Length: 142
Figure 1 (cartoon, helix red, strand yellow):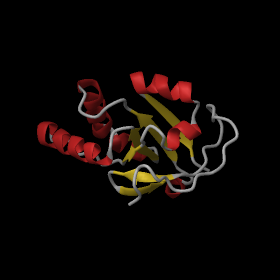
Figure 2 (cartoon, one colour):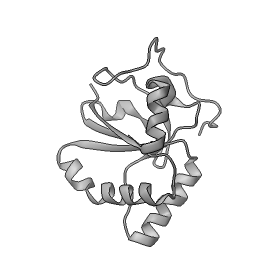
Figure 3 (spheres, helix red, strand yellow):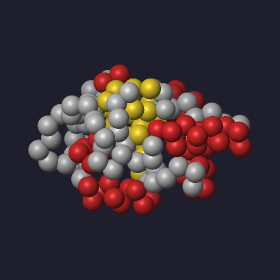
Figure 4 (cartoon, one colour):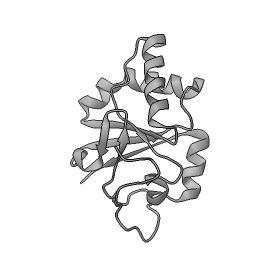
């Protein structure tokens, strides 16, 4: 695994992405090992962020999304989460969710440090707003 301070090569982006634009491929560490957006080519993807692990609102949202995972799967829509929290925090959090709510988080949670992938993909102002309230993006990876 790469250290979170040394990210793998990333496509050159001249301007931040906007809704409706193609999302370039990227790889990152996740709770399910190395995540590559290219592995989801041709599928619908819901990429959603949350501001912090272990918070009551984020936990309840993750429980609800995990319980609805079969409905997303029936639509061939992959679920992918991301947060600035560390991979180790994500792993402890999904263990806590399982222990307290008997719910398994079976979608990857991407570790996205402050200087990680997403600031280079989306406008930094948009990302900061998303950190405060969370967000979801639905797109088809072609």
